[in-house]
Length: 73
Image (cartoon, rainbow, N blue to C red; front, side, top):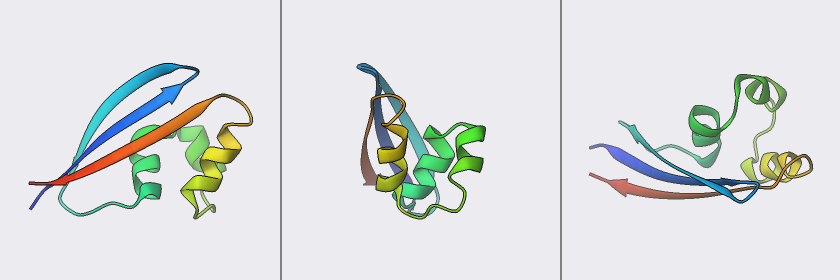
């Protein structure tokens, strides 16, 4: 079974639509690490476990919103 994720990221009112395929189900935090965060951000948030807290912290510097939909195929 494969898992397909549709990820809509809106940064400063600019939408970015991405898809990501995985052989196993992913958590929101794993999707942040794999698809959304830059290398520097991955290092900065390495010890953070709550993806909502990460997004709250990122929103202090720029407007960002993330919506994720999962489909099993």
